Amino acid sequence: MVSSVGASSLHTCCGVAPDPADIPTASVSASAPISATAPDPASAASTASSTTSPTQAASAKDPPPVPTSTLPRECRANVRSYPDGATVLWNGEKIGATPLYESPVPCGPAKVTFEMRGFESGERSAGPVIGKPAGVFMRLLPLRVPVDVTSTPAGAQILVDGRSMGRTPATITMIGGRESTLVVRLPGYSLWKKKLNPEPPKVDIHADLEKR
Image: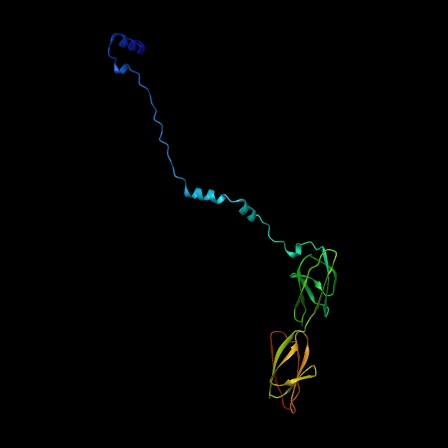
């Protein structure tokens, strides 16, 4: 048996054509084709949405506004009203009832609201600073409630706490949140009387008078 090397030499030197079976063949392994796959739109969108600018990230992390009740109360305020006993709201937060002296409040601009039954609400502005207490005063106006008074028969006199207010039918004004005595009288008829504590927005009163 002649080796492949010897056969090759023999063919070369002696002019003998080589046997194809004796020619070594080179083994070529075909590389698998590279697959060019288009990016998944969903993955691309997810990647884009996860990338935020520094400004957007900072905005998303901004803390919520601090409520007034949690602000340090380093300033003081003297709050009074006429009459006394009005509820005081400092920037919407109740801090007590008048009179208030050296009451601790947040520094800076503030809206001071006064509320009292039977009186109209009032507002004042204040701006306490450290070392200088704010002074706030409010004169409250009585709350006036319209009262429609009618009677059968008509033409009767209307009195509120003894004061004549006209004759029926009539619309009179009474102070709200305060008890008063309403009287309707007409000669020849029994006196009609009622305790009344009017509340807004309006009160309707009708008196049926009885003959004596």
